[in-house]
Amino acid sequence: MVQRPMNDEITAKVLDFVRAAGAVAAGVCTPETLRGGPPSTDLSYVVPGARSAVTFALPLKQDHIEPYLGKRDHQSHNRDNRDTTNLASGIAFQLAKYLDQLGWPSRAVAANNVYRPEAPGGLHDELPDISHRYLAVRSGVGWFGLSGNVIRPDTGAALVLASVVTEAELAPTPPLAPEENYCDQCGMCLAACFSGFMHESQRTSVTMGGREFSYSQRRGHVRCDYVCGGFAGLHPGGQWSTWSPSRYPIPDSEVGFQQALRLAAKAYYRRPAPAGGFYSPLLKHGKLEFTCGHCMLICHQDKQVRAKRLKILTTSGVVIEGPEGARQAVSPEKALEHLSALPSQLRTMYLPD
Image (cartoon, rainbow, N blue to C red; front, side):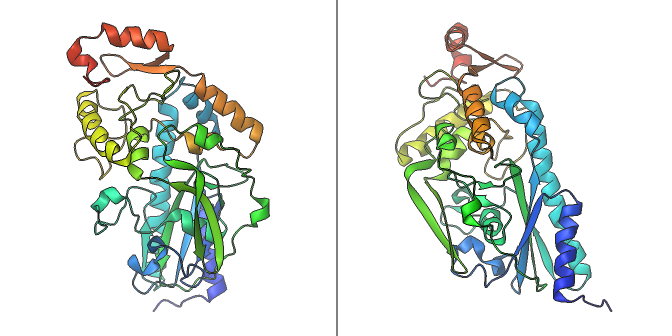
C-alpha cells in the first residue's frame, strides 16, 4: 500500500516536479481559492472529487521572437511554440500519473486545443475544460496583462501554461502582488492585434476566492481565429501583415465574421499545406500554424523592448506566397504586383472575387 505524504510535503514535491522539468513558475489553486470564478475554474468538471490543481508555465525562446515579428524567420518560433506546448502537456501527463500512483486520482489538462463539447456553440465556443490563465493568476504564476495574456517578470507573455487537477489536497499558493505587475496599460498589445479581439476601453473583471482580477474585454473568439488562424492576414492599413498571405477582409460586425470565416476557410484549404503546423479540433480539413500571436510576443517586461518589437512588426512588410508554399515579406507595392500577376483561379486563394 502506498503511504501518502503529508500536505506540505507532497505540495513541495509537486511544485519541484514541474520546475525540474523546465517550468519557470508553478502554483496551486483549490476550490476555495477559486470560489466565485467562471465555469472554467470548476475543478470538478475535470476530476469530480478534485481538491486542488497545480498550474505551471514554460518559457518560449526569446531569440526567435524578433525574427518572427520581422518576417525573417517563420519556422523557428513555430517549432518552438508547438514543441513547448507539447512539452507542457507531456509534463502535465507525467505529473498526473505520478500522483495517481501515490493514490490520488488526477488528470492532466493539455496546454491548448481542449474545449467543452456541451457549450451552446460546441467546440467553437472555445470554452476550455479548465482555464489555465485563471488558475495561473490566482496561484501566483503570473499576472494578467491588458491583453488578458498571463505575464511574468522574467518571460513577459511569451509562455505556455498547463495544469493538473487532482484529488490530492495540495496547499494553495498566493497570487503575485498586483502593485508589482509591470503592465502599464501601454496598449501596444492592442496595436499589434488588428482583429478587434480585445476591446480598447471595456474591461472584464473576475473574482476568485475573494480576489479580483481584470483585463481587456474580449469579443468573439472567431475574431482571433480568423486572423491568428491565418485565414486573413493583412492589416487594414495595407502596410504590414501577419505571416498569413491571405488578403480576405476583416469585418466590423460579429455576424460578418462568421460569413467571412466560411469564405476565407475555403480559400485556406486550397493553399499549400503549412510546413509542420499542428492539428486542431476546430479545423476539420487541414492543419493550423502560428501566423500571428502578436499580442503575446510584443509584451515584454521592458517597455523599450515592447516598443522596439512593435516597430519591427509594423515595418516588416507584407507576406506573399510562392507556388510551393514558400513565403517572403515584400513591400506593399510588390505584394500588389505579385497578386495582380497571378491567374484568377490562384488569386482567389488570397483575395475574394
